[in-house]
Amino acid sequence: MKISLPYIVCAFCLVGLFACRQGEMELLLTELDHTIENKAVYTERFNGRADSLRRALRDAGDDTRRWQTANRLFDAYITYNIDTAARYVALMYDLAERTGRRDMKFLSTTCDISVLIGRNNIEDAYDRIRSLDTAGITRRMRASYYTQQMVVYSRLASQNTSESRSRAYADTLARIRRVRIGFDGHSYVTRQRLLAIDLLSQQRCDEALDVLLPLYDSRHSSRTRARVAYNIANVYETLGDRGQRKFWLARAAVNDLQTPVREYLSLYELALMMFEEKDMERAARYIQCTVADVLSCNYNTRIFHSSQAEMIINQAVVYSINSRSRILTVMVSVFLLLLVIIALLLFHTQRQHRRLRRNTSLIYEVNKRLHERNEQFRIVNDHLRDANKIKDSYVFRYMQLATHYIGRVDEYRMELRKTAKTDGTEALMRKLRSPSDVDRSYRDFYRIFDETFLGIFPDFVERVNDLLEEPARFPVRTDGALSTELRILAVMRLGITDSGCIASFLNCASATVYTYRTKLRNSALGSRSDFEKRIQRIGL
Image 1: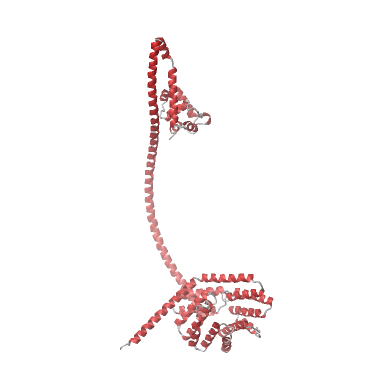
Image 2: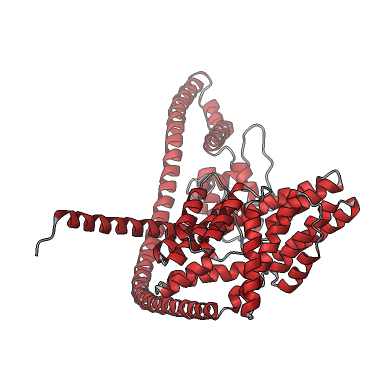
């Protein structure tokens, strides 16, 4: 059997068209999902516009302007929050009574009828609409009257259990619709939508689409686009085209949520379609969004009185619970796995920690010993540096002193020889017995010692005073001379601690040195036993 080329091309075109349509549908559903996720953004925009109108209401200069602003607030809230809309209707009634204007009172009543419809009080709304006096009313009043009249008869026709009465209401509804189509008080879009609805009621679906499709224009508001898209979806429902109906319901839902309104059927009907197609995830998401908006809006909507709605809500709840159970199971499994990994890591970490602690203890001991050695080296270094400093100073000074004394000895020898020659032996013996030269030499020695020592340790006296009690402290002399006690301490600072050596060095008795050392220790601040060690550390 041969298949002609045109048939093959046609088949490929149909497949490609179907694929494109499916891709476009998926993109639109993705946009709808994104819109649902960002509902808070549209809510914030709505609240911003409403706040602006409330400020305008507060600042309005007269009751007429207040009524007009309250009417605009009513229009904003009638599909968003029925209770808030009702409060603005009450305000409109009060302002209309103050002004005494018939048109304001009439329009306040039609707005009140809209609230009754939203609360599903259709019988009360029917009584109110029939009680209105329509003689001599303006175009705006008539447009509002027709709008509410159509909604009331539409609800009566769909809710009435009596077939004859339902048909009577439907006939009245069709008659009102045809009147509205020719009424120039409505906008062009409203009249065209009414024409399409009338054509649909006569099963003239193609003509209805020809009227509606051009109306879906980006230049119109999102609320208008939502209404047109919903009307188009209803036409495709009559034609039995599920794909196109789903597409246009999705478009209507996107526009409804972006307006935003909370009283809509588009997302609810789309949720039913998703439920029938077993797309339970989207069905649950859409029905949850619808229920949340209906509850927030406080509409006594017909959705909750539908057995189909109860079924999809129950199924959505079950699906949501199952989804959460699956997610919980996965999370628990992951958590247990992580717990096992954490336990293993903890065990490994504990082992590493114990090993590290042992190593740290060893390192600490080594560091401690190194620190002790370093401290010993530092002390030795300080002593060596100190000894080197003292050595350099004293070697130079005592080299000078030795040279000086050699010269003095030579001078003294020459002087003795001269005395022996000129004055005789008796005079020489008297001179040798005279102690004045020796005393003068010791005084020079002490002076040079004091100068040299204070040159190395200029604050020695102050540092010694810091170690002594107040009564035992030494005055700082301006001539730079040291007392005997200070010289004893100075010699000890140079490293000579033996009392006999100190006595020999300073040309005094050992008992004197011992007495002074004992006296100084007893006058020391703090521990007396290490007083001399603290003296030896001055300048380090």
